[in-house]
Length: 110
Length: 115
Image 1: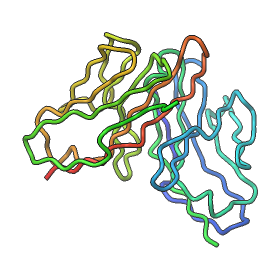
Image 2: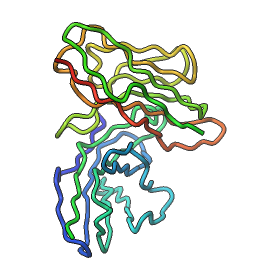
Image 3: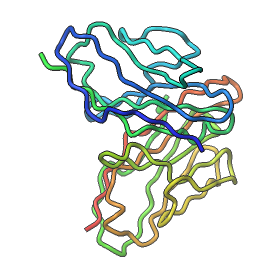
């Protein structure tokens, strides 16, 4: 069965500190990995995907197929990063039914 | 380009009432899905569709019904509302054969309260 684990429901850091949001997944085949973000009172939106290998808003995520992990990292957190973050693998027809973790609420304190 | 449009944004129902949450997308996406978001539970899939005329159940389908008569629309029907259906509902769409873009686009959500 497809499963996503985000072990931290809540994560608090101070501005300027590094932050890492963990994601482990169990998925048949070779999924594409996504991070979605939901800022306060806004809709979910794509933050980044592993195949792009790009940095969005200072965030990066490395896919570790051996550990089946896709942790999200940022070296210097900003207050505007405070949001709910969801990890989601998808592939084939499963692009239509994303499997989400329970999400991590990140709070960046001034 | 409107993207994914959900209506209404807020709704209060009495137990036993029925209603339809509307979802429309204008990106010619094949895949559409409905999720509910509850504290500590993340996003759970209710129903999804991989194309017009094709729907299937997700993780928590009981109490909900869907249909996909057109590519653009994917309404979610609550048949007999129950307090356990109090939640925030999100519609999402993804994947167009023309672009091969796999990113999911979400509606702004519907906050439903069943009293």
